[in-house]
Image 1: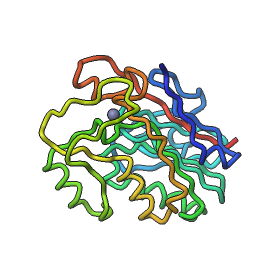
Image 2: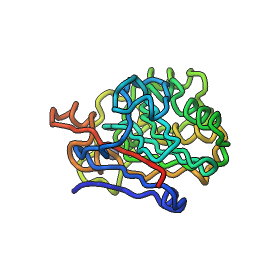
Image 3: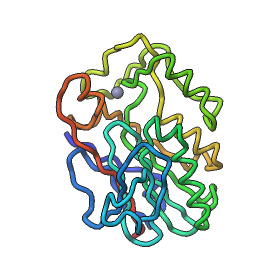
Image 4: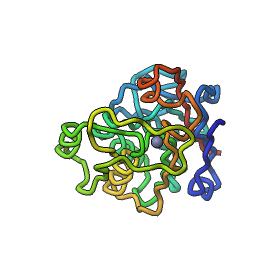
Length: 235
Ligand SMILES: [Zn+2]
């Protein structure tokens, strides 16, 4: 079963097209996207078309060109600015998020005329706390990182996902179950975006999305995986 969730929030804007495509499906032929490196580099679409011309984990379009990211557990974050009708696609894994890729994207959109209050955000399929175990030392490192909000969310014991389509990740390291989408959300709120303008589609790539969409699942079972492309563009 392929998973292609919609965001009622982005739908409500009326001027954007977007997709959180299933694993293995190619992006639109005219999409700009970077050579992703878990960095905080955010560039304009013109700098990454043809794709992967430079290293970037966030791409912003100021015209009708689609901007895309490819992910396999990391967060695909799509952002629309209602003021300038600019759009952004961000690859935000744990590393890039801690480096500030979301802050940098908001900052750059604001340099282009947005305000945090004019931004609408959809967080696509990504590994959820039901399947994302981290060691205690990693949690301590996250909590020490500059720019990380006070109220990050994690669970001492593995949360049960009643929507799971396959078995949730087995505990491997006696760790904690980290909520990466919530960390991203809290950072976006800290950047000034209203809570009501941030939506999470709530699909876990490990246990809910189509087979082959989770890097971590692949690591555990040596199965195959393919990137999921997510993209957004001004209509
Ligand atoms: Zn899961």
